[in-house]
Length: 296
Image (cartoon, rainbow, N blue to C red; front, side, top):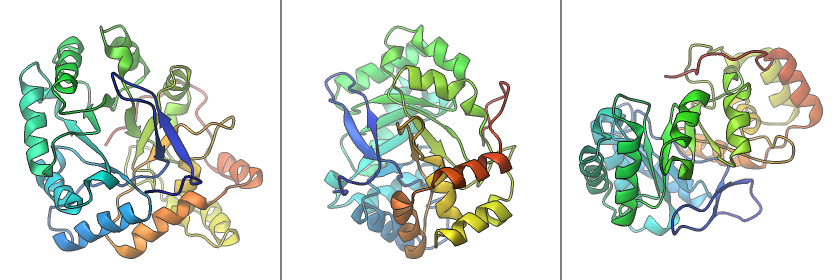
């Protein structure tokens, strides 16, 4: 289990599930199981992450068409109680019957009986009412504990909240990093108002239309050198930084090597002082107007 002193984010109670504290950094799995590195290396990296307290593992049926879920399943053998497992359903599978089947297939690939959190991967053509109803039935059947969404902008979230049961949404997973701060204008304030955390994918600027080479940026590198840290750790520490003394972002970087996992875990204890944050704000200012949601 993770150290209770590490930075954490609260997921509110949902249904019969009590509020829960999760480490502010978890583990992503995009591109796992696709042969980029040996599968056993990916499995060991996830297991090492669990041992270091990165107990949230995020995956999706889209990732390698289920291949990533199979990698996660191997990593979970004998360790299920150590992990908070998140998966996502394709929008076209999110109907009244499709979501049930898709979830069951994900559970089968993962080798588990229940997901801790199940997300709609992005907005689609199936009515939200139908998807939320399916998620609620999955929860009643004991196949998921919580549900949420991904790649929803502020207007999408407002539409979700107007849907019966939609206000129970636990989290919204979106692209967020120092070079892509669009959510700070409208979406993040809306979610903070509704006590809903952000789950940040690509937190080390691995993608997005606003992507910059942040890992080699002079300001990022200078701060990393001052803190005896890596640029990637600075970016992670920035993503999960408290705003007005409150943490509401869980970053989910992917790591497929032991050294990378250790660096991600160490970023939990990296503190950026006011001077460092001001310099990063000056180099990469927050948006002054609403921008389109950045998605990859």
